[in-house]
Image 1 (tube, rainbow, N blue to C red):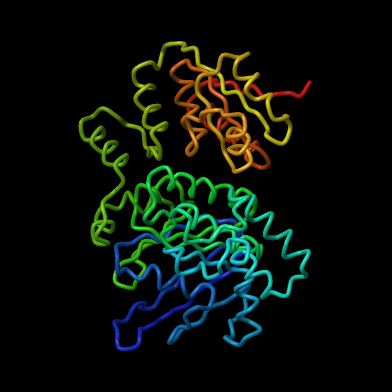
Image 2: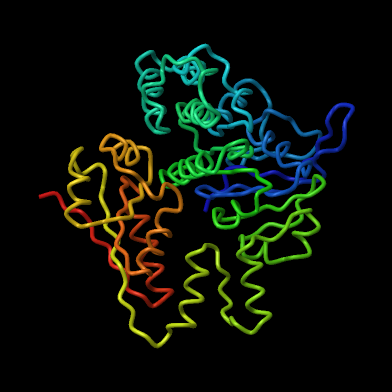
Length: 386
């Protein structure tokens, strides 16, 4: 992977305040999903604000595409075009009287033509599932809707890196699931995603790489397995290890499990138990039906569900969810869809995933990986247009 941003020995002290960053060394590679994890006051937000030039370090260097960054207007403009930042509180970010004007603010300031501004706003709002909200005043929106508008404002500028400070803060479980689904969708489209969070349950299954912080320092970084399996470091960061790891270690201590592969999801955990209980039995599994939302007409999904007697339905991506809404299809899964459908398959139940674009490939790869690791044979049936 090529390194896009690199921080070398970054130090920063707020005026009349504490030293917030104490010699941070950190890099961002293209295509990663990175979680900056730490308790409140660890320095996570300050670190993120360095990434697109909103804060300038007191000492140390930030390298952007391999060159030391200079804080003049031209370079800041280019950095902020490449690195989009979504604040923890969307009210901090949303400033215009209508949704359209707010999302258009970035493209207008980048000098886009009127036609390009309109198309960028339309595409960004569609991507986050907010088409039709263009004339709405932001103060009339819910917290989740405001978060989506803030995301759209950044997406309209088409950055390579998207930075989210506590992306699920103040959202209910359903809103949190929707936001994380959007982050996954952005990542599949080729974006590099960085989040800060104190929620180990969110970071553990989601991230490719975890950076653990405490007191303005990086305690360690690595894969989620490596970081969260280090109990002493996690404890020193004033956090707890993920519940799935606690359950797994309890099984190890009781001699009930010997696998060295750490479970990162409920599916992984169920597989560990199933393997020990049914290792020598031939089990019949349910099937996962897969519909490409780009390859089916509105109205035909309901017919397919009825014809194949499918009871569990999930949708991945804004377009798929919109089609389900138009057809009045009640969705059982909107986040963690693939693993939840695999769990249904293990219970001998058929399910359906509606999605599109690069996520079609992701579904196939995840199911293939599960089959290879578990020595199971869950079948995918893809809808074919007649």
